[in-house]
Amino acid sequence: MTSALTRLADWSARTPKRLWLISFALFFTLTGAWAAASPLGSSPDEHAHFIRGAAVARGQIGGTEVMVPHTVAGIDGHFAETGVQLPEWYRNLPAVHECYSWRQAQPASCTPSLGNSEKIQQATTAAGRYHPGYYLVTGWPSLLVDGPKGLYLMRFMSALLCSALLASAVVTAAEWRRRSLAMLGVFAAATPMTLYMAGMVNPSGGEIAAGILVWTALLSIVLSPDPVLLNRRLARLGIGGLVLINIRPLGLIWFGGAVVFCLLLTQRRGVLGQVLRRKALWLWTGLLGLATAGALLWAAGHPDNSKIDIPDSLTTGVAAKKTLGNTEVYIKQMLGFFGWLDTPAPALMYLVWMGVLATVVVLALVHGRTRDVVAVLGMLAAVVMVPVVAQASQAERIGMVWQGRYLLPFAVGLPLMAVLVCATRAPGHGFPWRRLVGFSVAGLALADVAAFYWTLRRFAVGTKGSWVATSAHWAPPGGWALWTCVYAVAAVAVVLPALLPDRENAAARHPDRAAPRPDRHPRVHEPA
Image 1 (tube, rainbow, N blue to C red):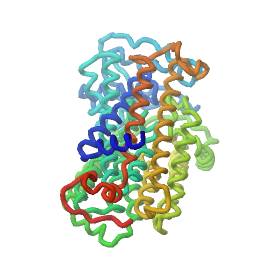
Image 2 (spheres, rainbow, N blue to C red):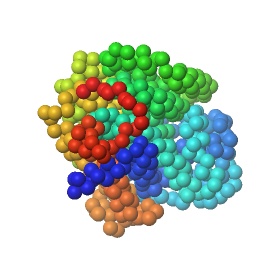
Image 3 (cartoon, rainbow, N blue to C red):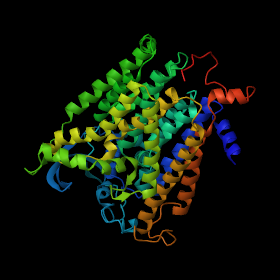
């Protein structure tokens, strides 16, 4: 069985193009399954992003500011939203989730109809200040198909974008000499929350997927330098950076943080000089500079004029203490906390994912050099302290609104950094690395399927319903059984490339049929 899976993995990774296409198809199956099997509007603020996407597709990049009363995190206020002109049924989107969200025992069968009125009316969206780039990609299907079908197509466009970014990260990891370890980092970073958000209409999905590609490309450039592969790695870094920076203002901070930590890991002489001499670097730097200027100008021209009644008791110190106390909650939200943050994953998922992450981090601390250890410990501290600093500095203006997924585009760097430090510094012998990778990816696949089924069960029968949703009150198009089977097959298949033997091992055992290089030119080998 194991040898058959290895042969299948070897076939899938025979060329970079084939590996990219297969990874893209499998990631799209996973993210598309989330898109098809989740009730419309069941993810955070998705109704606002649906409206924003449909408006941008119709040329309404801006709109009229409308003050709308809301209660967020227990704090009342009038929030500045953007009024746009859309078919009347879009006005019903904000209410489709209210009957079951935050009521875990209530299945999604209570969802009201959206209606089908095409009369043009004003709808409001809280996402009107967001950069229009993401919505240009996801919103155009609403021009082709009306009603729920158009909304599902918008989700699939988000899934396509994120799947392309994740597939590029897998191909980048597969270029490493110790590729099985490198690919484990990508699969550990692509948490169930990553895949879930990728299948929703929400900029977080593209932001997180772009973060994974940025970190994978940057770490490959500084830890596994190769002159032949440098231009393509710079291109992947540039593409990921453009997506990350153009989605939300925080993207620029996450990109800068990734650059700083990766520079800290650079220990080989001449690596930076080699990169700085490449014309491709300056081309992509110019494009990223233009994107940064555009994103900053957009943010400056679209301020948040919301008026929120922040209680006097919510001081900077109180906010910092509460945020620090919520660290465990934020970590769980980065791994998988679905719906409107009202549907936690099963305990199995958290145990497996945290076990894999803890293992690779400890191994990186054991095998890494001094600067590697400083970088890994710095990332651990940043995962805890960045939310504290960010929320404490803003609490007196906007309240306690932080969510774990906000940090995920940056936090994905922790498993990637830890795994790639091991791939660079740890000796290849004396430790069962292949066994570690095999058990890890098998556990991640199982945990991923468990999270998907658990969430689908919550929508189908509620948390107090039967474990097997045979009498579902709500079912997605095609039924829950179909999407669970599809997801399970894809979750196992997508991690198979991590079972590939490392390049020098494969060449030693089978010199006549070792997997070909991703290029036809000689390569400068990385140190062990």
